Length: 313
Length: 158
Ligand SMILES: [Zn+2]
Image (tube, rainbow over all chains, first blue to last red):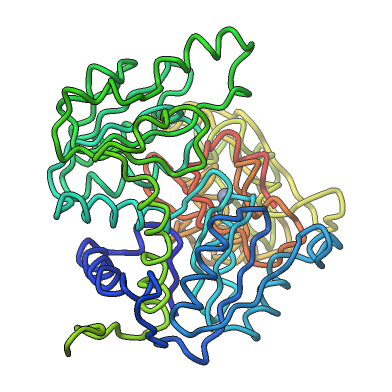
């Protein structure tokens, strides 16, 4: 069965239909309703590099739907460290489970695993490559706030060079006709190939170093963390990164429905004063990781989410 | 110089394969792509940089007593997609073959990206490069998606 390795594995219609499923599953994700759609199914969590958040959110998603989870365990003590190939690890887990969620430090690992496996693979990040479940939860959050994905103006800000989250997201957004503003320091600009690719697909893309001047017209402001290690020295970092920090005062002229997102964890690129504004959506976004992954687990396992979940039905 | 003359730079072979119209300077890479090494027992001859009406200059490789298969020849697309190939039997051309680039190169070269999953040589699945365009040749790794630099790729022949 096909897994989800990159967003290209999903058509726009499939994306929308999975987001619809996710929306209906919200009360289940919150624990207000128990809906054991995946009872008897086992998810294999294969995290070859640490990612507490993504791993926990897959685990929670599976358990909320009545399914079970087995974990690879600490990579340092597992067979991987003894030199087992990814192929062999997958052969074993493939036999134990119904679906596999994985993260791996090498790019292409998820596609490789899918070629080696019978069960579907959910790519939870491969090197600097793809992270489609993050993109799905981002799209879910945007649609939840704006009621649509089409024709929004989205500002992506901070480290656009190394952040795979913003690479996948920008590709997905232009499929829905969104306008993209890329606001980053020169050193951390979006890779040229990606910008060219976005433009080749007919997207309106603007590259700028100015974040604040683009806030007022934005529908979505997606912040990312700028890491100190990317800079030659501390002074340079402080000088540059300072221009990519949001506090509540920056949001005075914004559209009322504008949302601020962040893949978390944040350091100081979003000041806590933003948390209490109507614009802050990053904590909901983190929670949406569970519901988006619930919908994806059902889809890849071929389990239909009922048209009416709970309620008066 | 006529093509006849340039062909005669190397003795005619009785049985085997002649690969002509290799771009000048690529003959050694052709040998590499055909896994012809210092362990190869059959006679192999090559000429490099001979004048060619069609190409200005070209290389030629002759492998005696070995008829290369279509699959072997298809590997040459990487460096000599326009080469003409003749199977020789009893001193005459028995068959003409054309290099035929398919949908992908399977186990011919390794992806050039240093952090690709295929860099672990113990991983058993085939190296797969998907062909995006034949002219100019553009390839992308099936696994990691990285577009390949053709010049760099030549060093990664398996
Ligand atoms: Zn690769």
